[in-house]
Length: 290
Length: 311
Image (cartoon, rainbow over all chains, first blue to last red; front, side, top):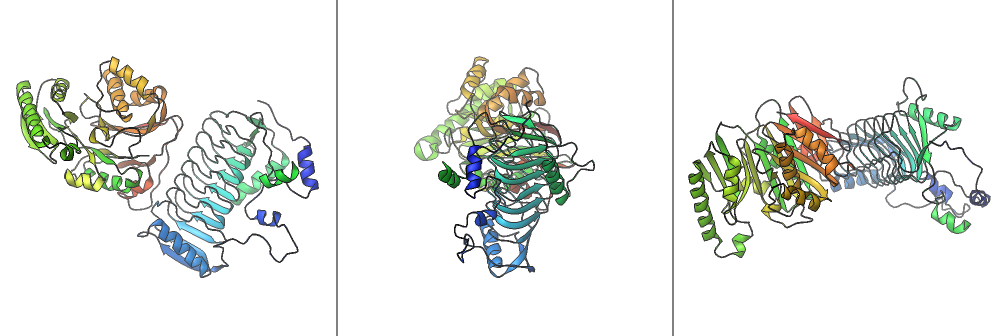
């Protein structure tokens, strides 16, 4: 098992930095600042449709017991449009596709469990889920936080781009598959092929992992306190830096998941980068640099 | 994509017919082509229930002489049962093409099923002392109503809503599959088996019969073969993870047990609720919520996980 050390910036990274661009992890709405082409323009970033000014002190409840998912989502949007910044969903009943496509700041409290595709494509809200989530929770999430108190199904945080996705219980297989940024934290165990084809971002596993952890990962970092059944192709053990330790401790404390013994048991897994000539520039950056 | 569900009460009989109907109806979006139930009720020594079909549902509209043929086939069934020494206690005809026989019989049940299946158009869907296997085209509510399943009481059940992908939309390709010729054993499956033909040829060389071209039938035959070799249900489920290729999650029910196996890729979903009194599993949690309409703790079984529960 080879250890990785951080090498000096490549020519491509150096050129990119000289051009005022960044190669570090992108997170959700930070992109709007990063990509603001003309800072002198009154326009301060992307104008997102369905993004509303809300007041966190205005609170509303939705009883989802007799509502189809589309009606629940429409109701959330209507309430945000009316300025409600705190919304509680009662009796979600493990229905699918609840709370998807929310593109602004919002305190969303889900007083129960979600089915498949819950909180997909969100950018901005802070979501707390009292129950469990099914397959593909937070798929393509771009920003915000999601905190799940119980277990989660497979494909947890698939293609995640930004934000913090936290599950305090156990998670199914293929967690963070195709992950492109952001942070996934698993309080318990995670299943097989976790971090499969991971491209960017960080994942923290407080328990054990199934087989082929980090299989075919291009980039990104996985921290694990327990044991994986096996590492996947091109996933290698790496050295934990002081920066990693500091970040880990801060993140785990933030979500009340810091073990009693601290982060001493955590180890780091990174991409061996033998499979694919991958770099972490955005496609638009590549066009400029290359 | 198909939907599967299972439940086992560990504290006595319950309305499993009604419960499984509700679970499968909530999974209708996973498979609208056909619905099937294997429900387990009380058994009486030397008494058996045989479910059989003497035609496909579509024959009723495409064959002008089918009713006459069914009468002839049923007369032949009665004749053969009599010749084998089986006493017919009750005959029910929930549809013009599907029949339920309650029999008293002390002979070889494998031979009885084989003799009945020699009749043109006849397929024994299930044979057992507690098992009632029902499958037909349509959603769970339709099939349940057609076969009066709502009033059925028992300890456990498995069920299936089918989206036909690699074989026809007909009753013979619908689940559950009876593990012919083993009494009271049924299988439902969600997935695709990629070494189906290799395994089927192997099973056929060993003398097992296939009634459809549906890959899921292999799991029933495979389970029957393992049990014939003396394996336990748990052994059989474990072996299937090694020997069967593809992506699959499947459930097996016997007269006393409910088993589950998930393949090595964990590519097909299953949500599990487990308590001292009840175990319920389904492709989606919404199905479990139909019988437990409150917040519950559930989990996803992992890859290569097998479980067996007793009633």
